Length: 175
Image (cartoon, rainbow, N blue to C red):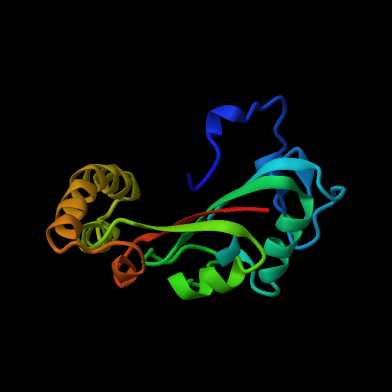
């Protein structure tokens, strides 16, 4: 078994952290230096965070490891093919994620989408106005993700080999 069951986790409390006060986080802070004690969390979620940190994004991963309890879990997403958006500085490959997570155990890196979803994402980015673009983007996602699964299945492409054209990566690791 790669990971213990998520059913075994009980969430009694969650804490949101952001550098932007407009988002009204529980804690206003920079993720490169978490204001939490060592081993104080069971799970840390980092959804589309690292690519927005211009300098020292590695510190977020180090800090995540520091604040997780023994057998804690980090769950994250990093985009790869994604349209430009504000304060968007980096893209990470499968191999760079492996290196970032060198201090975690049982690391699983999961490519998200494939050639169809990337193509539809590019097409929807050209649509104006914004509300129509977002609506069509969601519709395209529902169509393209199953198409990508069929393609990967036909060509038996999995894991690292499926990363050459992907929307991004989910990754999971344990302390």
